[in-house]
Image (cartoon, rainbow, N blue to C red; front, top):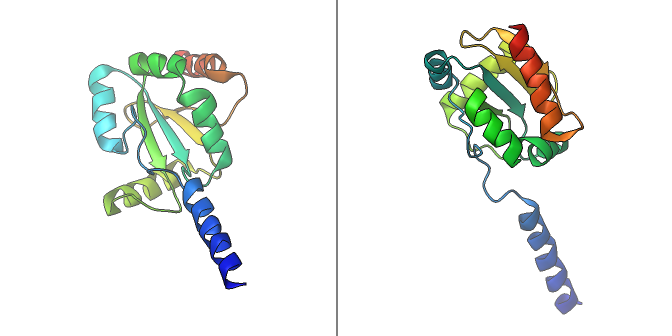
Length: 152
């Protein structure tokens, strides 16, 4: 009995570690520093896209990244048109105390009630548009962002 139980336990622990994210951190092309991004946005006359996410637990957030935000089409467009700010609320926390405080303030300021929420703001922090997961891939999402930018 003892010999049969050990492989089962090892397998169970292996499955837990396999399903954890390799490294919960800010994705390439994004920053977690809102103030620095705001200053750059002002200098470059670009809006900011704030991604409110639960990176290690939110299924729709992961889907948004996989289907839209991590695509070559979106990344290329965003590099020319936006500054990307990652406002993460993970269960396995990797963030500094400063980022935790900043994210809480941003969450309260923009009244985020679910994830993913993407808030398009100008360099003063004024909201220009609000988005969530949407079907249609990166081109559909980019068109929605462009409409919000043109209205501002």
